[in-house]
Image (cartoon, rainbow, N blue to C red; front, side):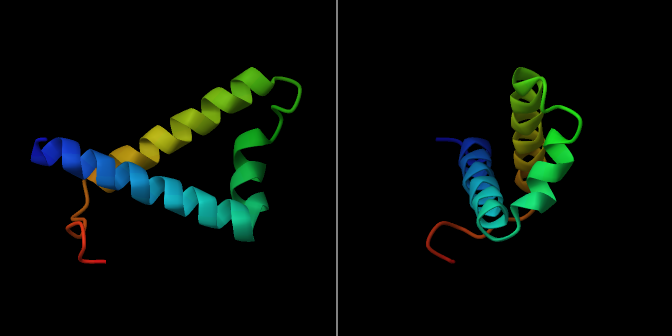
Length: 71
């Protein structure tokens, strides 16, 4: 596995953890933004949620992340 792949996987895990924490504690912060005015189109809302996750992963992968086991 390359460093880039490992960094992307770590960023994806961090993004998923972030999304899970937000949805568990204050879902309106995330759901309200993504699903506002899209309730009649669940496919579009799902695509926007997936795009949000990919953008979050992309941004996190550009940040210095702790090595596995350092956290």
